[in-house]
Length: 294
Image (cartoon, rainbow, N blue to C red; front, side):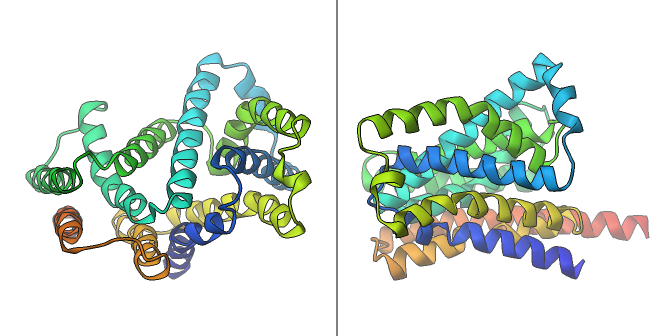
């Protein structure tokens, strides 16, 4: 239990510190960072799977077109989420990015209701209604929808929905997703190289190292999360997930000096209230079920 909490907390903390990494690559276009992240992530997971001699799944998957199609869709959603996040961080939108991951748990509940026909409890309806008020308030204040936050929540929520029913584990799934995207990523890097615009070949040694560690930076939190999720209840995992967006928000406001005035604070406070209602309802339900079983 304690080891699981440490693994999960470490994963969310690493995800929460992602803005520091991407800010260090701010001089590289978001699309190029994205393809380097795909390529280096694939190389790392190939090494890990080879060391573990864990390749039996690949031949089985290749004979199942429906499984491949599902992972192709999840790969596109993952790449979209990565691109939006990288672009947002490097265009000084860290605060709005954090909002997307605060909204994400509630978006997952809504997806479960719409797609999986799961019944929503009154507390969940109340949480979603309060969150919707927060989004409407922020929209009214800035004059447009917080599209970055909503796009991040939507792409990651849909990605999670596809992976929820996927037949592969975290490492194998990431390997297949990056493998499916690899031809496009490699083609883009070749095109950049021919035009003399590949930052890995034209950049400084620091830039090369930063691009190369995109693989470990992507895979290590994912492996920690998988290790933690196996050891702790979903209710605990659900509470720990707020570590990531909280760290992102703190970085955006205190390190990168992004605007966070009273009007925006009200919108965030409504979202936080919704999350408090959602989390409290989930914990109460888990405690009630445990008490009944006892």
